[in-house]
Length: 287
Image (cartoon, rainbow, N blue to C red; front, side, top):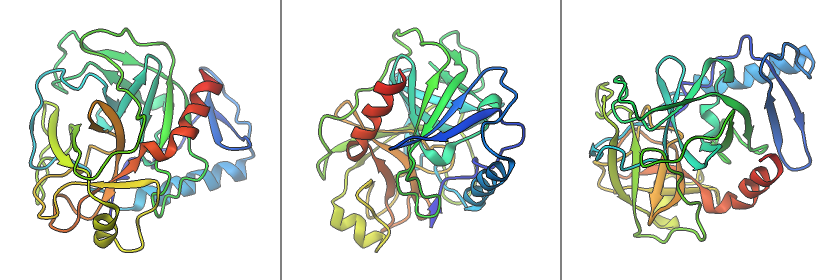
């Protein structure tokens, strides 16, 4: 089972306050805050859960793709803790959508937008602090159901030709729709090589039946498969949390799968359209 989660393990020194609302779990991040609003025992449980998620082996890269045209995916985000560890998608001037399994200590990370060459400063980048993180209260780190989180930036980004939000879906995708996946993840199935430039790959949406046949008993209503049953093109290690964009709308989040670009094992993505009520509620309540 491919779970792209090598990056949920950091926990020490996080300064946050957690509470549960009626329909979602919320983590508020306060700059300079030194106190936790939960008991120490809860902190231990929280970090143990993160550790358990991190222990799962991950594969989440672009395989079989090509170097994107520079800044052709202006919603692409690099989540960075001194190095790129996950992707994300800008959905308005102050909010990013990513995978819940990409959660990291917010004080150790920044969100980088307008990036193309990941190790070269090109003057198009915007480096943003994260103010608050909201992940779905039903997220299951074992099955990767509800693998989604919303990140509120400390300040709005400057929208320009290099940094633009992607539209959220008005309807669910149709099998056969061609979609773009992008990221800086590994580009090989049998060795590790992370590219400098943003990579793209086009993959089709698969039917629920094809998805379920590839992963019997593992696909939920919050998941969608995209890729080729013959293999060869896929997302993999380093692309987790990144976008699956179909007809100009964000339809998926890179989540999990078996291996990378393997025959009969397409990529599995968080299904954005199935989670729009939750997304709209968070954006409305906390914007």
